[in-house]
Image (cartoon, rainbow, N blue to C red; front, top):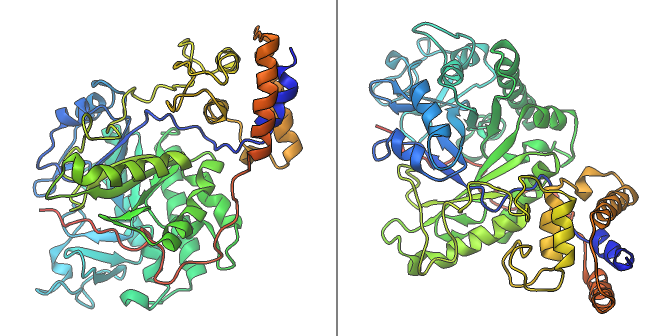
Length: 476
């Protein structure tokens, strides 16, 4: 049993992310129901669903609790549902809206409009900036759990949604800068703290007041809210991460059909990478499918690059149509496509090599026994060889990451314990195999390097991609 002397250095040299995301996890994002029925949402084989909870904003018709339950559990894949809710802008098609607040040009009327109502977003007619910290605005979002005035968050909870997907978190920029038409009533630090306060209030209300402790909170964009003006983590950072369960990010690698400038992508990644290290899920939507030609020849290169870069980060991708309407279920597979959307497998962990329903030392033993071969079962990434990349995926499924440990010594000890447990499960290697292990793994351990934890110390010129206003078309 000499293999452990040679594999342990290679294990300790690996760079791994946590939490583990199964390659078969997939996310669907639908904000307009004109072309999508509840039955189609149910039958779509995705594991995550971001959805507008109102089917018809004209009549106020919403998904019923029965429909939500059917969507979550009635189809080929069990789904985690996140209901869309804008907290940084008011929308004139919502039940809380009063048309008398604005004039014929859509401008708030002084003395008539509430104090929290700001100017109309010129890119989205009918959407208005709000002073999100105002108690009257927040009372329109949550706090009335029944009756005709039931607030949006309460209706979402009563629909049986698994969580809420909070948009316009980046609205805090608007009130702390004069750039891009903003109104600097606050400093960035003040606006940041107030937005985190609001998100924390939403989480506490759902978990405690409404007694739904498993209710999920996912903000969208504005990932740099985790850092203060000195580009450091602080007490607000910790409060923010304690309140949320993940984040949604748009336009990470592509601005529709055009690759983002590397500096902008790097700026956002420097923040997003902290989320998995804190045990949070990252859902990414890039609008990379050409609206006028959705064939593989016109789109596969972009989609393949987008998927590969998300996989490298441990993010869950959704390739959406470039018109940003989010009004169809985008799927692709077969000839010409390098990827499949949704990914097959309904989120089942591929690292469960022996199929017993759990990723454990028995699976690790199988992988180590096949190390260096082309055995397809433990070749978790499907590249034709069982190697350290597969080992990294399997160990990530155990939740072991450098980010979970504050020093390298504890990290190495954890990997040693895991590997030795696999040896106790009966791994055997011939003398010739051990010799090959020694040669191969010695080379690998020398060549393996840790993740680059450095990053930019501020935003690139022009601002970070995906952290300004989302470009969602107005609904009917």
